[in-house]
Length: 467
Image (cartoon, rainbow, N blue to C red; front, top):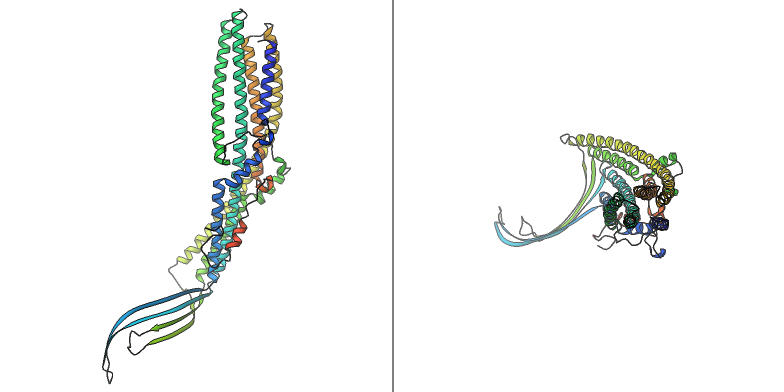
C-alpha cells in the first residue's frame, strides 16, 4: 500500500474514533444527552411509576390504622307486615289482626382501650410507609442506573460499529491495492489470500457489531421510552461520590436504600410484636343506640316505641386456646429475622461499595494504558506500512498491525465506557444516585405530598389525582 493511502486511512480511522467516542452530531445542540435521557426515564419509566403507585397504596395503611381511634356509626331501618293472634285471660279475650311494622335506628361505638393495639398498628403503618419510600428510592436508583447503562452501552456500541465499518473500508482498500500489486508482480497470491481473509474477518466483526448495536438500541428504548437520536458524549460522575473509600462506606451504611429499608422493616417487626401482645390486654368500648319502632310484635295496642341505650363494655381475655401466645412468639422470630436481614444488607452494601471503588480505580488506569496502546499501535502501523512499501514487510505484517490498532481503539472505547459506568455504580452503591444529586431538569417526585393528602382523610373514595 502506498504511503499516501496509508496516511489517509490512518487519519480516517483516527477521525472516526474521535467522533464516535464523543458521540457528537453536526449540531451538538440537537444531540441526545445522558442527562436528558435520564430525565425521560425518571418521568416515564413504567417500572418507576409502578413503584410510585405501590408507595401511594402503602400510604393508605396509616388511614386504615387511624380508623381504630374513630367512632363507628351505623343506621338501620326495617318495614314489614305482621299477623298476630293472641288469647288473654280476663276481659281482653282474644285479639287477632294484621298490621304494618317498621322502625329505624342509629348505633354508635367508640373504642376506648384495646391494649395499645391501635397505637401499635398506627406506628407500624408509618414504618411501612418509610420502608416503601426507601424501596421507591431503591427503584429510582435502579432505573437511573439502567438508563445510564443503556445510554453508555449504546454510545459504546455505536463507536465500535463505526470502528468496524472503517476497518472494513481500510481492509477493502488494502485488498484492492494487493490485487494491483499482484498484477504488477510485487506480491504473491498468498498475500492476496491473506488480504481476502482479513476482509472476511472484518466483515464478520462488523455484523457482530451491528447486532450488538441493535440490541443496545432496543434496551435504550425499553428503559428511556423513546428512539435514540444522535448521542452526545457522556461524562463520569465520580465527582459526586465521596473522595475516599472510608467516607463512601460510611455514607453507604447510612443512606443506601437497601440499608434504610431494612431498618424500617425492623421497626415494622417491633410493632408487630406489640400488636400481638395487645391480644392479652382487656378492651373497653362505649356503645350507644337509638331505635324508633312502629307497631309491636307482641301487642296490637302498641303504636310506636322509642328506646335508647348507652353502655360501657369491658372484655377481659382469659384464655382463647393459646393462639395469641403463638402469634407473639411468631412475631418475635420474625423480628429476629429482620435484624439479621439488616446485617445482611449492611454487608452487601459494604461489598458493593468496595467492589465499585476498585472497578472505578481500575477503569481509570485502563484508560491510561489503552490510550498509550492506541498511540503505540498507530506509530507501529505507520512504520510497518512504510517498511512494506520498500519491501521490508509483508502484507500479513500490515494486516496484523491494522488489526492491532483496531483492537487497541476498541479497548479504549470499552475502557471509557467502563470508566463512566463504574462512576454511576459507585454513586448508586453509596445511595446517592438520584435526580437531585445528578441535577436533572425535572421536579423530583415527593411521596410525602400524597401521604399528607390521605393520612387524616375521613371520607371519600376518590384518590387525590382524581380517580
